[in-house]
Length: 416
Image 1 (cartoon, rainbow, N blue to C red):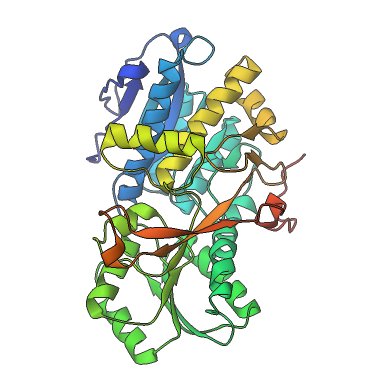
Image 2 (image 1 turned 180 degrees about the vertical axis):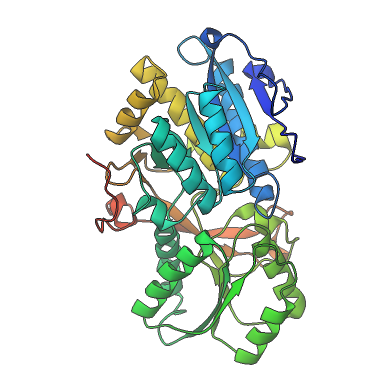
């Protein structure tokens, strides 16, 4: 979605038809009467290195809106999406304020950048408007930066690390092994590396190389040459967005044979690297092979509409709007403060997994299952989307879901 300094493209999904309108920055929004619709803000990066993920986020939330409206809407009213490119933290903050103050949205869904999610969360807290974070992983958002109106359907970094770490331990890839890491040089990456290093160190591994990679980096050859010289036992990615795409593609081109893994991952970025280039063991919050009735139904509907399977980012935005619609119906009201109270009281939701999820009141993190996947050998891939095989889910079927959640270390000060 193109942007300039004086024009922002805003997409309004109106009813099941999904009509689009463009609104200038200084122009009043052309909307139906508020009594006819429930307006939901959707704010996520569409440009920049996270753009490919933002596109899937938009697909997911649009499909959810169409399904909700086709089934009669919410409280007899249609859902209307007001969609924006968050761009960066400063822009995200300004657009969140405008969505709330001018566009009168009932709540906001979205974001992928942890820095932008923090900015949106601060606006949400100040205006007492619910914001459901669908893609930002920083543990700090669930810790010292938490607030009563910011909820997280996306997993925290610590959840991602524990999920894939369970399988890395099973593969004897940690204890006594030398690790080399590449880390995205912004809030998300710094937080993820901190959590990953702690986990690896506690389980007997050692980092012999640690590289910070600018978010706009596209040439990984300097890092790959260092890795070749260091000869680690494991190469770990703490990268994000297009960084992962470029890294795994160039890693394959260099022919490096050191096993790789990642502590943060999105299926779309591996698809972007091209068939046969993906390798290693990675964590996912959800994938399109999760075998439940609701998951199969979602995959079928998404694939029919967009011509390709959904991935984990689309999962978060799709489910968030479904959760909001269900909650408004149960509350008989679209009031944001009532919504926040409802979500914090332990309401459970079908999130396309074997076990229902819920937001725990300590930090508003959704407690849920996670997954790990292993890259398929190129000869075993049926098509360009068939790049990995599931390893399983964590926690185990007889374990409390909260064993995977971020530790309650007292840094989050949300009042119960």
